[in-house]
Image 1 (tube, rainbow, N blue to C red):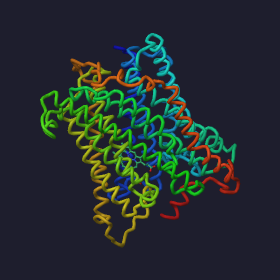
Image 2 (image 1 turned 90 degrees about the vertical axis):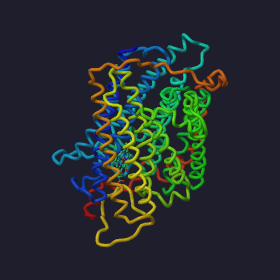
Image 3 (image 1 turned 90 degrees about the horizontal axis):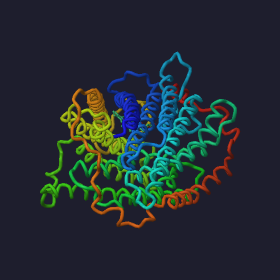
Image 4 (image 1 turned 45 degrees about the horizontal axis):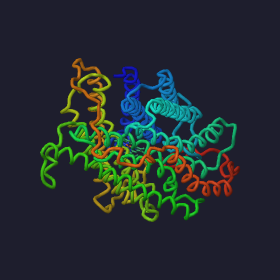
Length: 562
Ligand code: HEM
């Protein structure tokens, strides 16, 4: 209906999938290298590869997909295009320029002849130091996302002027609350990069207090995981029930969930710093309590999405406690992929509870358990929902028929199986004490039994799972490329979404008062971060000269190990 917006969505999805291809390729290299199954890279390049894997996947792939999906959802649900499409292209261009700079500087680090290095991992806080282009790229990328949010707010206000008394359409509500959360969360990373890291990497300011940059990073680093997740939630709440042939169970519950994420996402970042010195235990405890509250919106989501699809199945004649499951469209890759993604999210939630517990965290901190956890969440709940959702969305924005639904179905199931192998091996490896983020030393010459199976068997499982994932990724990208160029036009596409069983009129209008919720979110952040930040600056200063005379790089460490 809005061809100019469809073009924006197509471009965002294309960039997202290019990043997926690069990041996924790095992933299989790592999986094979660190398990010593196949080594095509030098161990000294492991961090460049790992940085590329992290940044291309969790910054470029996920966020470009979000941008495309939100542009589509806001336009569809408000029933009008953005106010000024040139502004829309401005943020697409800004995000692209940022991604090119940051991504390009990481890849340049792999070319020996080019003297640029950005091996700082996707967590990029000091004292590791990257080339200024990397930080500048990240900052430009974030500015692009801010412009995108202004674009979507403006589109909403334009709609509001014509519809003063109506409830905010659900998808637009989801876009607004997510972007409010993002604007708040990115303040931390903006200060970190613009005030500290860029001037430091340019050599015009001394090294900043590492505790401060870590804390500012995690101020942003936890809410960003919900930023990855919200597009998946949007699809689970609004598209999945439709694919299942039913309706969303409860619109008010969906609104409550998105508001809870707006309120609770940011005041929890300190749970990534349980092991950090310099933050008092009491602040860590508060972060833990806030984190446990975050289970609530996830449980509400599990309830609402399952209730919606059960309703759909019963409408189609499904009977019994579990018999209704047979009436679901399992042959549809969009449905099955999202269903499996939701299942994995439940598993990821449980391993996340272990991370979140202050005492249990000591057992798994910095071990392979941690990537095991987030390959279930962002690596499957999000990535698999993106792949599955694309089988539904891409025909709607290209007008082309999905090239092969059986390949799509096979591919989403293969991702699930691959992740069962890889992630389970990572979790168990972590319990056996295997560290993350390292390919060396290889501990050869002696053998020992881990808690569950030998280390050798865990390695094989990890590598095998990684290869299955990579095959699935290649099938996905090929299927989507062939869909976009398919001569056969798609037919019978409808984007109207059926109304919820319990609609917004059954909930208080205060849910739609975004100003109040944004204000409460700010207050909670001030309460959770005010004192810890003050004490970090008070104890360590902004530039604790003498703590480190020169920036730390990983090369000397690797030289010692190798
Ligand atoms: C880390 C493999 C897909 C995000 C890792 C590691 C491996 C791996 C083996 C651990 C490296 C280490 O700690 O030494 C793979 C494979 C994939 C895949 C084979 C599929 C082809 C994904 C996806 C995402 C993702 C889809 C997110 C959307 C990450 C992140 C890290 C990581 C953020 C941590 C990087 C760091 O520690 O700095 N991956 N992965 N991966 N993966 Fe993946």
